[in-house]
Amino acid sequence: MASTAFPTRDDFAAMLDESLGGADGGFEGRVVKGTVTAIENDLAVIDIGLKSEGRVPLREFAAPGQKADLKVGDEVEVYVDRVENANGETMLSRDRARREAAWDRLEEEFNKEARVEGVIFGRVKGGFTVDLGGAVAFLPGSQVDIRPVRDVGPLMDLPQPFQILKMDRRRGNIVVSRRAILEETRAEQRSGLIQNLEEGQIIEGAVKNITDYGAFVDLGGIDGLLHVTDMSYKRVNHPSEVINIGDTVKVQIIRINRDTQRISLGMKQLESDPWEGVAAKYPVGAKLTGTVTNITDYGAFVELEPGIEGLVHVSEMSWVKKNVHPGKIVSTSQEVEVIVLEVDSEKRRISLGLKQAQSNPWGAFAEAHPVGSVVEGEVKNATEFGLFVGLPGDVDGMVHMSDIAWGISGEEALHLHRKGETVQVVVLDVDVEKERISLGIKQLEKGAPAVGAGAGSGSLKKNETVTVTVLEVRDNGLEVQAGDDGATGFIKRADLGRDRDEQRPERYQVGQKFDAMVIGFDRSKKPNFSIKALQIAEEKQAVAQYGSSDSGASLGDILGEALKAGKKD
Figure 1: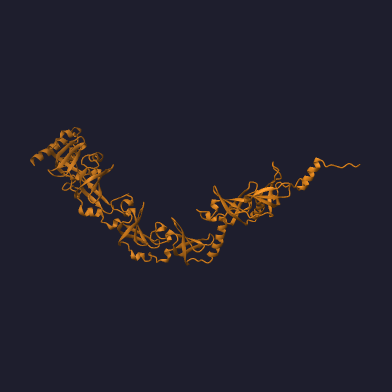
Figure 2: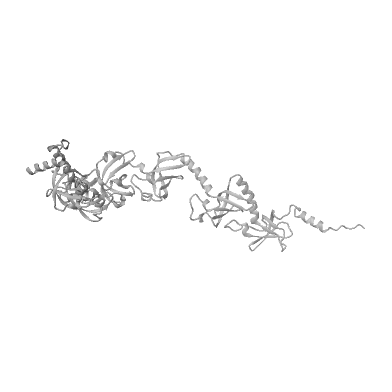
């Protein structure tokens, strides 16, 4: 009797593999077709031909924001995660099936750089999630629109095109851009519109956006920049002073760059140019009234009429206020009188002077206080070379250290006065052009040479012998006065006599009178006297008159004869 062959465990395993597609072609990890056999609550029961059925949530069959349109008997594609789990059920996924199919399709589109359709359905950190027909992609916030979008609500759950920027299937990462589609579309529109525009053309547009430097105007699908300097001939601090968002404006096309598709617009070009004939309208030297519109570190701008401004440089703002910020002299919106100094029509520049419209305080001082006048002022400052004294008319004059006091050095004289002290001074010289006033203090002393006197200090002349009176005895010499009310001068210690014993100031007393010779004048026209020079001159005269020592007569004999002759006279 023939024996019946019974299949072994290995044979059974081989037959199972064959029924499931072979050992190398199993169901797991594949997308297969199945049939909906039932719908239980929110689950769809699907038969894919295995010993058990799988269950898939209905939401996996619905598009974002919509309900699933599924009924018994429908044939669907699902992804087999596992043929059998611990409960003996088949694990199926509609999302994985759609994702796998979507990835295959998207890879083809990505390689062709083609657009794909998707739906924005969620918000995540830094952007949004987009459903690309089963595959989920990331949409960065910067790639939503050409300009920042505050409310993305109207774009949610709405099918629209996207551009794939990056794909990584192994990591399941897709990055898309909506902005790229918009820029491409806008570029096509701009390219077509820009061909119909020409420089110099006048066109109307709507103000879309305003910035600090200008405004963007929509010309019907293409934007042009209206710079703030092209809005008006007059000064515009901010574009919002002239236009507002939404306004319809008439502009002229100034410049078109077809390579970069940039358009420059202008409004003031539609107005008459106020600079035409400005040189004839504002001649040099004309006195005008204007309004201060802007103040800078280097001066102030003054509007003479709408669209015409001139600059008052800081050096032309005040006669007496030097190194002062213009804001401390004038203020914005202030009306001022100015003088036209220079006009450059080509560069559209007008130089104005503020101080020229006012009287020159230096000239006024020279007229009111001629040389020799005595004025009173406050010591404003002391420097190493003199004193600055505040004078009437807000001008300053300088007393050089050599004109402070007689008989002492300039350094010593500087210590005689201090800042804030009120002093009387005499006007020595006024230079209106250089804005300088020279003053003197010592010239006010009794016996001082008159201001403007010649080199001889009145009646005194060099080599003249005069009788002087001792006014003061000092260690370095004598302060003396010629006559009773003549010029005061000084005799140095070395000029008190020929012999060293005679060169002692203490030999003299205040009020003592004697003869001395005028040997010169210092830079302040004060005479210098010398007893020694007088002695030498008298000796030479005596020798010449009464004989020479070479003839055998002694010097004593000669001087004796001279003295006798003097007594007879």
